[in-house]
Structure formats: structure tokens, C-alpha cells
Amino acid sequence: MQYLIMIYEDAAAFAKRSSPDAPKHFGAYQAYTEALREAGVMVGGNPLQPPQTATTVRLRGGKRQVQDGPIADTKEQLGGYYLIEVPNLDAALDWGARCPAASYGTVEVRPIMTYQ
Image 1 (cartoon, rainbow, N blue to C red):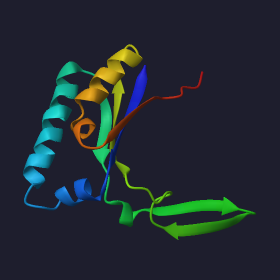
Image 2: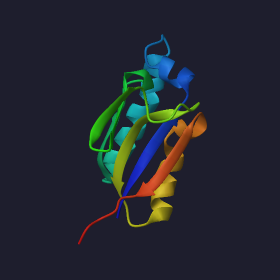
Image 3: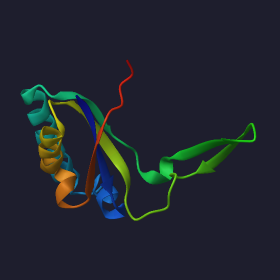
């Protein structure tokens, strides 16, 4: 079964991506990514650009509404994701807990909906 591991970070975590701490920050993710690959569970994943680069689109009454920024103005924003394939939720939660963001942000694990 496939699960999405979503990484939520605050502004300080996004700032680390371009700070002198960037190698340490990304090094933890490189090790995590390699562990997922070695276990044969990684399907895909990517970090995202900071929230201020987002554009939100809605269609209301047949008209497109475009708004700069993420969908919600919250302390933590979606910073990246991993798509994994594991046997069950317990295995997905184990991988979610190993994600570096679990120690400083929030990691959401959600099953992928499949269509028959």
C-alpha cells in the first residue's frame, strides 16, 4: 500500500535551507532518503520551495481566482513529501517517525487512494 509522508515546517526550518546550516539540514534528509531507497520502499519525493513561492488557484462561479501564497496562513507549511510503498500503516508510521522533520516539525502520514 502506498502512503504519503508530508513534512510540515515552520519559517525557521525553511530558513535553514539557505543558511550556513543547510548542509547539516539536508544531510539528515539525504541519509533518510538513502535509508528509504535501501529498504526498497521509496516511490518518490521532493522538497518544496518556501511557502511564499506558492500560488493558490480556485474556481468559483466558473471564474478562476488566483492568490499569492499557500492555501492557509499557518505557523507550519508543507515543506516536502515522500511517497512510499509499505505493507501497512504501522510500517508507514515507523518511516514517518524516522523522518528528520518529526524531531522539529510535523510529519503527516496518509494512505493514497487507489481506484479500481
